[in-house]
Length: 123
View 1 (cartoon, rainbow, N blue to C red):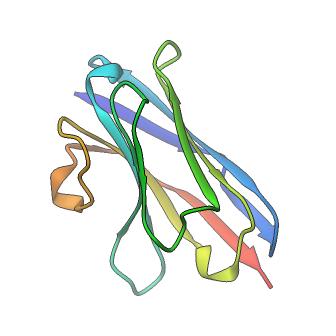
View 2 (view 1 turned 180 degrees about the vertical axis):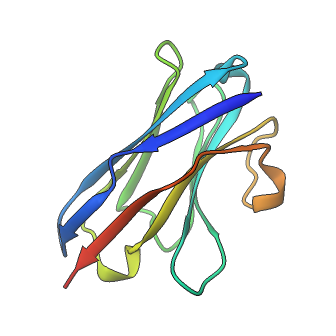
């Protein structure tokens, strides 16, 4: 089992930035690729970004590439999502997730999930 807890969400104005954190505990975090997803009201949960277990490789959804940065610190069992140039369309609950397989963009391919953190962008 891997337990994940997100933090760092909040209310920001358009153009602002946030850094989301994902604290992991339980089984060795460094064995898992990590992904970030988001879910806006009335919409399905969508893939945002992923990082390999070592942290060497990253992958982003087209809608966020260039504005989002994903990173991890395996020594601290932490994952991060830096969000810059926020726009109202980024408003959603953001979830971190862990997968035993790399480069997965589907919700069903992730084994463990956090409870989510709300990001709200005002115009």
